[in-house]
Length: 216
Length: 216
Image (cartoon, rainbow over all chains, first blue to last red; front, side, top):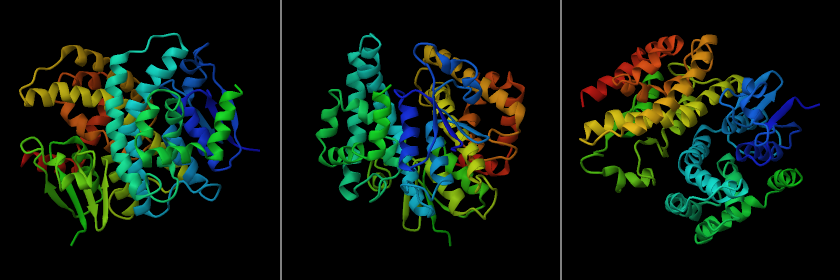
């Protein structure tokens, strides 16, 4: 009987990030759906006792309660180091390289990727109008980040070395959404970035997260 | 002879974050000043070989080269766990709570704090005009984050428990700048936040970073 519970929504990129990590680690968990768009349950009790900022996902492992997807994935990988895929390293120098990759995702990649996802995927889904000026501006920002990734990925198969780590995994949710938009050409124009995203999107753990989303 | 080198500028908040960590850990290091404002050295070789995004600081420890201030402080605290102040925990559950605090700083606090710092401190220093609309908007965002902090700090002395950790330390650079602006009232209106910031700003390690900045 698993002690792990994930409270979230399968369309939420932050929820998907945590689910992808749990599947890579081959851990059992209970998924507790939060009705965000219809009922705004993430802004009310009991959810906001789990995350005072009212954002999915919330996470429990026994009496430990966490929020912030990237803190949750770090916890999972360290607490369950012996299970499933090794997504981090116990060696401080190797771990530091993974940590740089994770910070770059969080502070450089995620901002344009999340804004493009909002404009090109979420807004149309909700019947709102895409702001073309924002799209153009964020495409330029994303391209700059992907230029750095292209150089990095010419040297190693993954962003933080020759194995798949959390630094790669954290990109999957926005990547999946953006590949269905015109932004995909920015990725495909860079051969190493293109090969990398094809490789990580094909991982069985990620396919399981997509199946959950599509069956919802 | 220390193997640690920090390449940066003492006015840079990200550089200060790394220096504060090194002083807490009582580690020797060599500081390599980068002439950012005058010469734009952070956008040129040799610095951009250290950080392809061209932002201070860059960091070396022997043959290990890192960038992104929060990845650097994590590396320092894990690689030099036995030195100076214990800023993280080896226990995965306790470390997870520290990680949540660090993610909240990076994803919730830093955005309004950095924008207010830019508008109210950096722009006036560079002879540029403050945008009042941005200041008002970001003050509202900051106040919301500090409301959550106030509840948290009513339960424990520091953001991630009863000891000072990286989750607190990462706030120091923007906190120090903002305390010299009208934004200080947003902190002082919340008694637990006010006591917390007074406590962490008085740490001897932080005073040493300020002395470096003021002697520059």
